[in-house]
Image 1 (cartoon, rainbow over the protein chains, first blue to last red):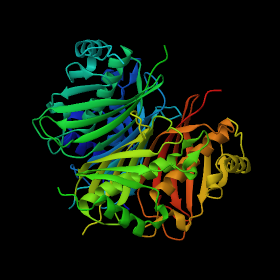
Image 2 (image 1 turned 120 degrees about the vertical axis):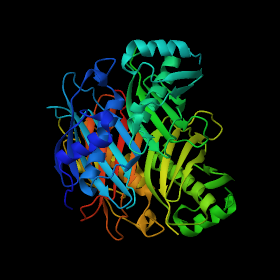
Image 3 (image 1 turned 60 degrees about the vertical axis):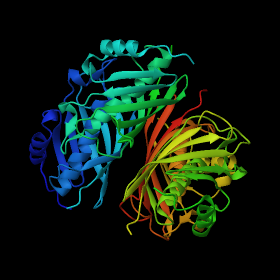
Image 4 (image 1 turned 90 degrees about the vertical axis):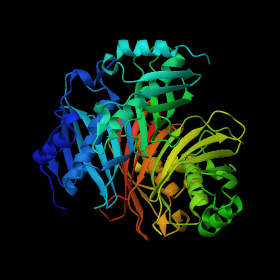
Length: 139
Length: 139
Length: 139
Length: 139
């Protein structure tokens, strides 16, 4: 399948339809059925203990799968998450961005399933993993 | 087991250790192994289509289990989420607060498991469900 | 919504289309959007430590949601599980049957979501919980 | 970390402690933090529509993570699954064995997390994915 949206197009589309998250995520790479996102970690993402909060990591994983789906099917703002699982495995390192590596395992007409591994930038062991199912709106 | 923290105490503790989320959640009720939270829905929680975003619902569910655990074990800021599953089942209604009903299914020495149902205020059918596992820090 | 299949009809249908599991589960009750199943625990369900194996509990939860869906929509053998989450919280007691209490949280045209709590017969604390999503075949 | 059990040792250990599943799974490869299992598909694994049943795929994923953990920590029969998520994405092909590729994402003192992709032998697109958390018994 051909990729339908570039990193630049995904970023502009997201800023238009989700102005709330403007600047939260940087699309670093778009490949066939895969994207890499960077989340510059800021004060608002932290929780007690100096670690990144669960909701911030959920948002990163969710956004990664959303962008991976849009990259393949084109701009459809109304694709919605129907299911998610998330494992928080290690404490993210303070002062390092988070990197999400997402690949789509399934891209059907109605449902897409994407897997995400989240890393502290420059580290090998993942801090979290997630799987998200998206329902794709009919044409 | 006796409840160790009241709604008022949970709120004050959260505002102290999580100043970022101040005002985001209202503890409406604390019972043995259970809490009810209200999330006043604001512009920042919305996504395209006028619905509440996934990360906002994750944050509500996560916070509900966190508060239910703290209510039973007392103020321990460092309890951390290790696993979560979430099903988004219906579109939340615009203009209605979200209500999270959480009950703890397990409260062990190391792990606690809580189930959450999320409703649009005043409606019977849940918009989402979630299960969260928390790791409890040793004494 | 009206229940379309009784406990007796569900049992007969299951024995016809799933002869492999004949006798594994007893439908104890069918209500609106809910069923209760009993799994008589046998040697084949056990694992080291004398506890019931994970796959046996998965099968019980899966079957409970399947029956709850069929009870509402009528006999459709081809409904399939698309997603599942499972938390194993306590060791089932040796020598006690397992009881699954299932309720459907959503019954849409395409997807159904059911929640299951599994108990050792006669005990109050659940040994496991599960959520299953079923895809419903179009007419 | 060094692998502590070979494919042969894992197979013999499993047959000793789980005689119920003897012959159900073949350990094809053991690597650092990873194993590959084959499930020869038999009549008992099938469900209506000629596809492999959910419980059979759960058992395969569960066993793959169990073996991957044992390969690294040595024979401890009492490691138990505490949490699982499973996505069933495609219908397994009739007449083809299932292959499970498992890698451990975390191997802590108390908890291990493993990711599994399940394939119909010889096909590229996975039929299912799963994540399992195992609690490791203290020394």
